[in-house]
Structures are given as C-alpha cells and as structure tokens.
Image 1 (spheres, helix red, strand yellow):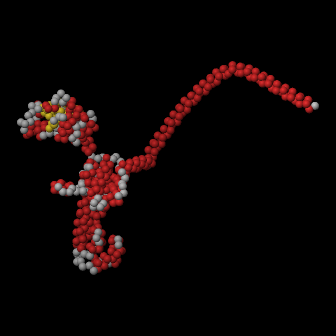
Image 2 (spheres, one colour):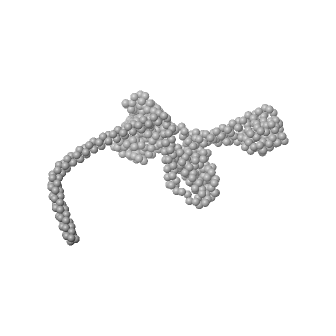
Image 3 (cartoon, rainbow, N blue to C red):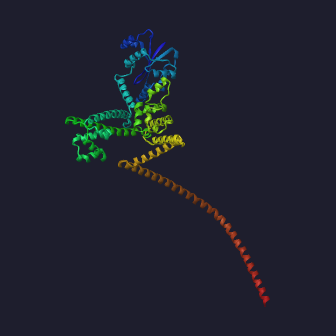
Length: 536
C-alpha cells in the first residue's frame, strides 16, 4: 500500500510520496535516526505536488482552518487533482492532525493516518522542506514562517483593548482572594485588639469600621470626652460613639505595651488599605463588564456575569455554550456525582447567585433557572459577536425575566419573544442614529469645514446642472416658438383665401338682412297710415 504525506507549510501545501517503506517492519527509532540524513531521506521521500498560497491572507485563512481541523476547498481541490488517477484503496495519506485527517476522509474518502511513524516522516519533511522546493531562495521560508506566525497570533488576540475579557477573569479571581484575605485579617485584628478592648467587638460588627476605630482609639485609657466629636465622625453615629466611650471607661481588657499597640495599628491600617483597594477593584470590574458584556451585565449583574465568563474561560467560550450547559456551569461535581449514583441532577450552578432565582418560589426555581440560562446565552452571544456594544437587548431580556416571574406568581401572560426582540432592534437602531448625529455634532472644525465644502460643491454641481437644464429648456422653447410661427404663417396664407369667400358671403348676408329690415319698416309705416286714417 502506497504512502503519501501531506505537509502544510507557511508557503503552501506539499504532497510527498514515500517509496519502499514497510510500516510493519520499520522501527520508529531507526526512522528517527535516518531522518536527519538528507541523502538517505531524499531517496525514500520525494515531492510529487506543491500548491503555493496566493497571498498572505490566503495563508492565514488556510492556517486557521488547518488549526481547527477543517478541510478547505483549496485543499480539497489540491488532493483531488493529485489523486485523480489513483484509487482510494491503493494508498493512505499521512497527516499531522487526526481531526484534519477525519475531515479529509469524510470529504474525499481518502484513508488518513496519524501515528508515530507518519509523524517521524513528516518531521523529516519539515527539516528538509527547503531542499525539496527548487526555486525557493534561502531565507524566504523563514520570512514566510515569521510573517504567518505574527498574523496568526494577531488573529487569535483581540485587538479591541476595551473588550479583553482576560482582565475580567483576573479581576474576579482577585476579588475572591481579597474577600478571603480581608475576612481573615479582620478576624485577626479583632482577636488581637480584643485583648485590649473586648467590648468593642459587640458594639461594631463591620470589619472595616472595626479596624478604623481600633486605629483611632489606640489606647483605651487615653479616650476622653474631647475625642468624642472625632470618634463620631469615624463611627458615623453619635450614640455608638458615646457607647464606645462608656465601654472604654469600664473595660475589662488588659493593657498593652506601646510596641504592641503600634503593631496593632499598622495591621489595622493594612486591613483598611485592603478593604479600600477591594472597593476600587469592584468599581473597575463594573466598568470592564459594562464595556465587554453590557447585555449580560444588565441582565444578571456584574459579579455573576464575571463568574460565568471566568468559569467558561472567555466570553467566546461562554457564547458557544448552550443554555443547558450554562445553567449548570459551576456545578460539575454535583452533576457527575448524580450521573454516577443515578440521582437527581442539579438545577443550577453559578446562576443560583442571581437575584431572580432567590425571588422565585422553591417550586419554580428550576424553571426560573432554565429560563434565565436561556436569556443569558442569548445576551452573551450578542455581546460576543456584535460590533457595537449596547445594553438595550439586556434590558429587554431582563424585562422578559421579570414578566416570567410575574407569570409564575400572578399568572400574568408574558410578551412573546419575537415582539420583544423587534422592540429591542428598533430601539437599537434609534440609538445608533442618535449616536451618529452626536458624532456629527462633535466633529472638529476641520471636518465641519470639509463637510461644508462638500455641501457647497454639491450645490454648485446642482446649480450647473440646473443651468444646463434651463439652457436646454430655452432652446426647446425657441424651437417650439419657431414651429408655432411657421404654423401661424401657413394658417394665415390659408386664411387669406378663406377670408375672400367669407367677405363675399358676409356682404350677401348683409344685403339680405338690409332687404328684410326695409320690408319690416315699410310694413310698420303702412300700419301707422291705416291707424291715422281710421282716426280721421
């Protein structure tokens, strides 16, 4: 059975043929030792086909596909052209990655292998690859490898600095460790200073405030009425300040040396500094979550969203998780224990810390967790794959969860998901238009001048076009006038002849009318004469 080797280099795909190899009789150690010698290796392995990449972008796309175990169309065409005259049962193809081999065998029905023997042969191909390509100049392969490595690394790293989710993961881990450290240190301050002033523990419960008061009081014997206003500012309550003052006067604690008090003060100051840093770190986490995952933050909160992202590994991994996985994220031990013992699987993991789960009744906690996980998966995908960050979708999804709670409690029917998403898309488009208008208003003077110049140019072009149209229209009007004049001249010429006949006819009519009028007047005269004669 023939052996072929597929080698993916930075400059293109190479197909090699290994002659006279019996895999069963070969020893991997012997192959490993013979690979370094080019004379021996060149007699066994020969280049049969090579397809270079068209450009650096093509090389990056092919590298991304190979790293994910996907066979591209270019690789398929290359293999089809190389093995068009041979049957698939006569050979097998050796590849580096077993995932790539599986996709090749599914797409082209070529049997692929990836074992130690094939890997050693491919190691030799990689070692002597520049010797197999004749037209390859020295140094070209190293340059292409370096360029492809840089572009591949840049593609894997996100360029938007404000949307790097690794900072959120580190911040939430640091918050957890700070909480543990601050609690343990505060307990140590309480125990240490409690030897001197044990009554203070019952009066003040907050750890940060306790350390602050312990640093202010220092020696309880020196606490007097004069320090009451300052103590009131520290505590924030005048009644508590008076209670502390009375307890200090009747305290049962032992006295401490000045050196011990100095150490207690220093340690209390460290606890205060850690607490203040913890507050600043929380504010930093809130701002980063609003930049990276605004929809997830508005839906489920900063802390729970950050814990989900850190547990998944990244926002992209969280977006790839189905809602069923997101629902039990953080409860893996309970899940596998339930599967092993055939018990009930957990209903929620990290998502349990959301306020929605706490507000739901014990009967509806599982339903609420499933519904909330569904909305969280939608919000994480919008945050991960949308180009412009906005919290509009998260607010709408939060409203849906609130409606679902009302549905479980009161029976009020919630809105449909299609209607909510339509409203969210409309609001998002309106906000984008408003942002565009604001950007135009906030443009610098140079850009405004450029836009004005562009508008003036457009106006001038429009005026020129209108002038051209007006010139054309004037020409058309002149032509129409000429046509009308010609038609009138022809009509006048025809009218002269008609006028002659018409005048004659008018004269005849006038004569006839005159005869009629004279006949009427004569008749009237005869009637008058006859009347006069009768009167006489």
